[in-house]
Amino acid sequence: MIPFNKPTLTGEEAGFMRLACRSGKISGNGDFTQKCQGFFEERFGFRKCLLTSSCTDGLEMAALLCDIRPGDEVIMPSYTFVSTANAFVLRGAKIVFCDSRPDHPGMDEDSLESLITPKTKVIVPVHYAGVACDMDRIMRLAKKHGLFVVEDAAQAVDSLYVGAGGRPKPLGSIGHFAAFSFHETKNLISGEGGMLVINEKRHEKRAEIIWEKGTNRAQFYRGEVNKYGWVDVGSSFLPSEITAAFLWAQTRNLEKIQNRRLAIWHDYHKRLEPLFNDGLVRGPFIPDYATNNGHMFYLVCRSLSQRDGLIRHLRKNGIMAIFHYLPLHRSPYFRKQYAGGRLKYADLYSDRLVRLPFFHSLKPAEVKFICGKVREFFHGRNT
Ligand SMILES: *Cc1c(COP(=O)(O)O)cnc(C)c1O
Image 1 (tube, rainbow, N blue to C red):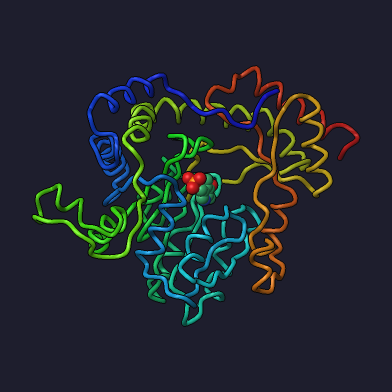
Image 2 (cartoon, rainbow, N blue to C red; image 1 turned 30 degrees about the horizontal axis):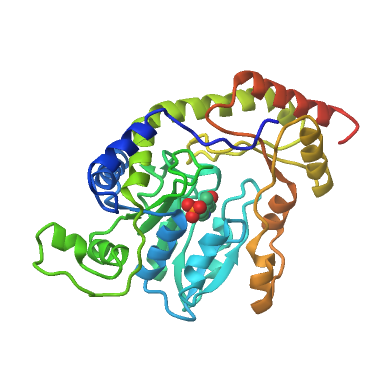
């Protein structure tokens, strides 16, 4: 069986984890945590980074930092992971779902402004498949209405937005806050893991306090205050040094990991392009203003039954391909409280999108085999 995912291992993880064990400090915010945070700040120009135990944690911190109160409205795509919404629901927010774009599962920027009310506080663009949302448009709207922007950049490490003026900006550096994931299915991993990016100086201090259980311990260890205590709300969002050591090995190999993933992506694309050109199935779409970080390779079928047929055909041949999100506006939790309604494109991607196996150690022969089976399906009687 060719699985959908295998965790990326660079070979350096165990060595750094051993070093962390020997260092005498394996709780959070030690040397490896600092090194990882410094790496992301330098490499991508993020103002301040804090490692977290998950992207979910990063989003929960962002919701606290936006000071979400019961009744505040938060706009996000329905076609996303449940944590994007839960982080704000935990603070009492009302979620307002935005549809996906006709050409891409990302949020439909055209419909965004009509969803803004006097109660709106935050917009959460999700960079699906590591492909940028149109951030200039979103930031302009946010500025006009005085809203926060929290980028759900879980899938978007090492991806860029090229806005007007042409200067590429790394995803995660544009919103007020951004959250990344290092879950084992993402490009850089630490088993479970994540990171909050704080892009404005005015939020830095409070972010650190929320991160350290509502205390000013980080300032204490830097010698900025001579006692530490409970100064605000917070929780324990830090990962241990063992996790940070694992992540450090990955960051040192970012280039290698990314080159490999992009090679796999382009290999898929080259082999399946004839199907796209013949209109038999849709391939991934990358707008002019976005770059590709090789996170995912997906297809969009003509119907739910065709999509399920393709998944069955691949599974019969030992290939694990899987669909993705069940749109949140139709989830049992959301529908209990709000009218679910219809979001045409979120529903469409939920029915028709399928993701092909994609991981660092996927071999060229396996990509060739998978593409052969995909072509066989679309050229067979199943279409
Ligand atoms: C993976 C993912 C998350 C959650 O990441 P965790 O690190 O598992 O908490 C959130 N949002 C999106 C879009 C994701 O893909």
